[in-house]
Image 1 (cartoon, rainbow, N blue to C red):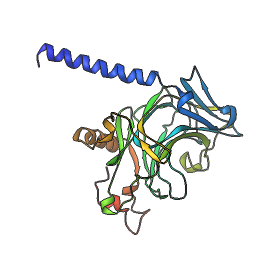
Image 2 (cartoon, one colour; image 1 turned 45 degrees about the horizontal axis):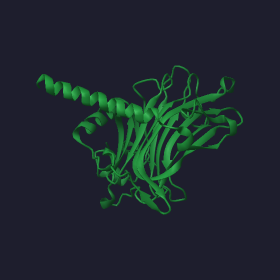
Image 3 (cartoon, one colour; image 1 turned 180 degrees about the vertical axis):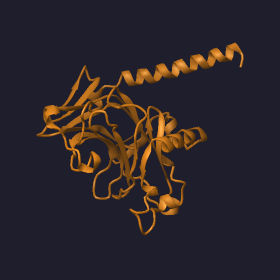
Image 4 (tube, rainbow, N blue to C red; image 1 turned 135 degrees about the horizontal axis):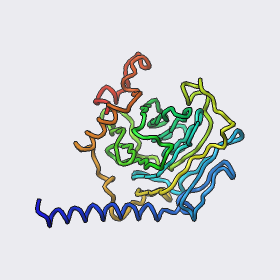
Length: 287
């Protein structure tokens, strides 16, 4: 590669990084989300640039996006509850409504000080979940903001952490596996107490002397087809998410995460499914 070409790629990289920074920096939470419950425990501060949810013995809190989506990419930077967070759950997910709802789910399961968070993921199609995968992260999510992304198109659902893929759910409708494709979903997030199960199966309870527990959010970005008036309206120029498939580079990173940081995979739990693993597990490699 000659010097001119090297300079070109360097400038392209810097432009791309600056573009993404500007997109994030301009995100206005006042206009993008609605504080749904929890009263003063949910608040937007710093001129719309920071949202905080808090949990005390009385209540948690939650918010949701103002828009509904039918395919797209959603990014949010989150800093989960710091310190002793045992028994708390910070949920961040896309969901439709009703008994046959679809859902794409991140849940951050709190832990005692010094113990790692567990990132719990799940996918519901037509009201049925039971597709859990759990991970430790390669960093402490309590210490700083990190970007958690959902890419949802007609081919697959991808979960990203700081642009690193951790999970994929492929569209296998042709094999009889339901796939979310027709129900618009809204982004939700909440902070709540689940100390009957969240930390070591409920053995470690929430220490309310540490309350209030606070999770923080910033830089919400939606690049998606917005559902309104019974139809979906997509951006004039789709982002890469519209046609993105599982290429070799993404699959390589995905396998690295699942080899080194996955701690539970429903597709490997034969005791849980004595009559046979779910169909999607039997027809794919499980990545």
